Amino acid sequence: VGRVPLGWQTRAYSNKVEYRPIRSVLVANRGEIAVRVFRACNELGIKSVAIYSKEDRSHIHRLKADESYLVGEGLPPVQAYLHIPEIIKICLDNGVDAVHPGYGFLSERSDFAQAVIDAGLRFIGPSPKVVYQMGDKVAAREAAISAGVPIVPGTDGPITTKEEAMDFCIKHGLPVIFKAAYGGGGRGMRVVRKMEEVEENFQRASSEALSAFGNGAMFIEKFIERPRHIEVQLLGDKAGNVVHLYERDCSVQRRHQKVVEIAPAPQLDPKIRDRMTEYAVKLARHVGYENAGTVEFLADEAGNFFFIEVNARLQVEHTITEEITGVDLVQSQIRIAEGMTLPELGLEQQNIKPNGFAIQCRVTTEDPAKNFQPDTGRIEVFRSGEGMGIRLDGASAFAGAIISPYYDSLLVKVIAHSQSLQSSCAKMNRALREFRVRGVKTNIPFLLNVLENQKFLNGAVDTYFIDENPQLFN
Ligand code: ADP
Image 1 (cartoon, rainbow, N blue to C red):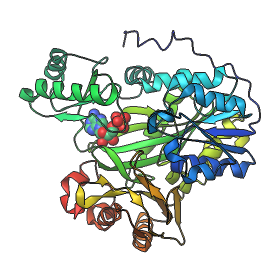
Image 2 (cartoon, helix red, strand yellow):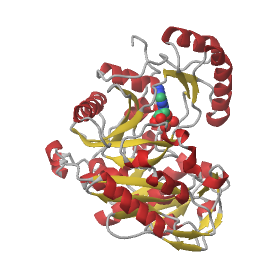
Image 3 (cartoon, rainbow, N blue to C red):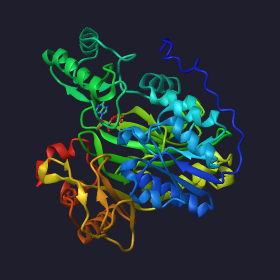
Image 4 (cartoon, rainbow, N blue to C red):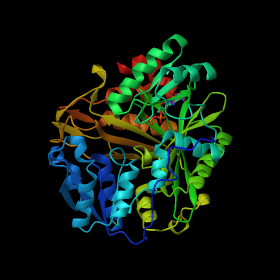
């Protein structure tokens, strides 16, 4: 520490908001997460408002809201959802009083959170200052250090030269992982195991980061061998109360991207669970975390675990936490943004008890036989798995839906909940087999291979699982 972080303390962030009941929520997002939030609004008697790009004009998320407005006309498909002034104008013109950012798009942009607040609207998420601090890898790590949370050894800040990269590797030893300082979503990472490969890999990773994220600055961390990715779900309120809703295991990853998630983490030593959740709560209290967020850790085989990052937003896999705790995280987010405290919502730590195991599979329109190339077109036939313990969160999963190439390929999230991990997996397996999707390819055959793998069924797997089991792709 001792270094002044990238200026988050001095930025003119303000969160001077009047807490008041929310009557209308605009979701600055699309697809399944927009629909997820509309459903929560509907149940709370709150009006829901959608935005949609020209490419999404016939997308179902537009029709699931009470009102919808075209955004970003003339802009490319993704950019349309990033047009902050236009989104704010839609809110002000149409009596919207709160904005939910979903995940991806503007969800981790502190300038967006601030613009929402400056317009006199409620931002359903943490304060802009916290969004900034948690989105900045260096500031987040410094917050973790000062809260006493163990972190992976890493560079003190973003680095831009191969000499700095060499210095770090010589000082800390190999292996290391290079990460794009301004990247995310598991992209732009590279593991280096040999000294003679440091310089070349650094150059390559940095130029990839430049083209993908517009900035070539990198961050280096010690690479943890055979880690499990375990993350703690949190809720905080305006009064400084923070609770955890236990953890999720997201170790089943392909190219550092989550594929299957489980809550709670199977076979996790209860002592480690206690320490991990305690650290996560400590960190959130330390930064004054309000609303929903996740603290991510990597746990090694020796029983150590290290903070990697905070996601200051709702996550794709929030569903499994909802299933095991019975807490509607999106409704909680809205109530917290209205100014309700956790005790008022009945969310005291002693009342939050995990029940059974939940598992989520991300069904995507990707073809496992073609190296997960996204498939597009019209869904001709669609029948889903149903029945006890199965939840589906989707938006374009129906016959007649057009899968466009413009956005990510998540088709539907299938969630199974039951008393044991084994019976959750059996429900998931059975439900995935009931699916009939014709017209576009999906990754269901791959997901079934995972669900039938004995190592997976035995419980704890680490992040190497998919890479080490190429037969899963057949
Ligand atoms: P992103 O923000 O792009 O999602 P994360 O920092 O959350 O990236 O890391 C995503 C995944 O990459 C982790 O779940 C883990 O599998 C792997 N990873 C990241 N950092 C390390 C590390 N220091 N050692 C080993 N694996 C890592």
